[in-house]
Each structure stands twice: as C-alpha cells, then as structure tokens.
Length: 215
Image 1: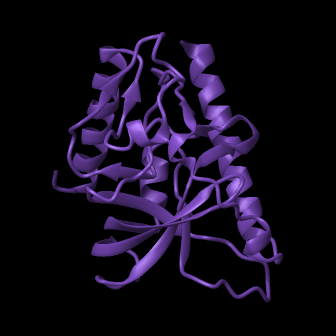
Image 2 (image 1 turned 30 degrees about the vertical axis):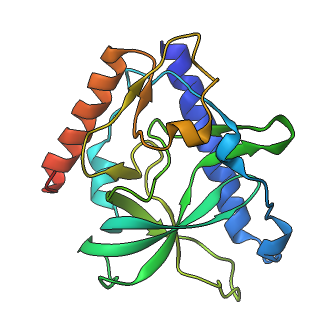
C-alpha cells in the first residue's frame, strides 16, 4: 500500500508539473489542444494511499477558497485540461461571486492509447454538483498576458472537492482500468476498497470542519 501511495503521489506531482509547464509557455494554446472526445477514454484508477492527509501548513497557505459550479466548458490539452466554473461563494481571495474562472484539473491524457490518469485521488468535476476549490492563480512568465482567469491546484491531493458526499464508487480488480471517463463522471472518489473510501471521506470532512466549510 505504501508503494502504491508513493507512486500515486509521484504521478500527481508529475501531472501538476506538466500543467504548470503548459501555463508558463508563451506559445499559443492552440498548439496544445486536441479535439478527441475523451469521454470514452479508459481511466486508470490508482489505490489511495493510507498516508494521504492535508497538512496544516498547506491549509494556511491556501490563497483562494471558493464554492464553484462547473459550466461544462472545457479546454483539453495534452497534459491537463481547463474547466470553466462559476464562482458561487468566496471564502478567501479577491474574486467576485458570479464571475467565471478556469481551473486546471490534473488529468494526464494518453491519446494514442485512448486512456487517462487522474493525478489526484478524487475524480474530475461534473456539471451536476457544486465544489469547494482550493486554488492559486496560475503563474505566468513576465510579459505574458493570459486569455482568461486561470487557477491551479493549491495542493495536489485535495484541490477540488464536492460539497456533498454521494455518490462514490468502489471497483474491484476486474473493473479497474476498464471504466470510461463518461461512466465515472457521477462519482467523486473512485476507490478499490471500502476502507479507502471511508478514509477519503473522513479526510474530506476533517478539512471542511477545520476550514469551517458547510457540507
């Protein structure tokens, strides 16, 4: 389990690095985009490490804490994708309620294999639910003006979390890596055991309680 945890964390870091690298370039975003329908890509599911938690140092470093709802607009890139969200409530940060921003979600796409890997334990956002977002404004090189308000994860493990707890999904070894992105869309946590799922929900509640976020 520890080895899986380390592997998952390394993968998450690698995905986030790719997203940051994409943001920092002055090249056109058009060069990064592809038009595949990724809804039928198979999602590789990693076991959640028992050592996951959200440290106090990261919580105090959050620059922006929001309640958001995805609009359904997405821009896909080779190493990540941008999701547009409407800001419903601002708990921290200088944004305005009602405005739209774009959030990088750490998803590594493999178009040649029609597969994907979610660099975080929690699944991608869907348009049916509201989420708490823990983000920072995307860094840009000097002199570069972004086309839109873009934000990246403040912390790899828990950067965007659904306000409610249901539904979630437990998959067995036969189902693992066989589910499409479309099939997994309704779920927040996709785990390989009930113990893993219980742990992730408990950590989520702990974070919400300590930040005073209702759920």
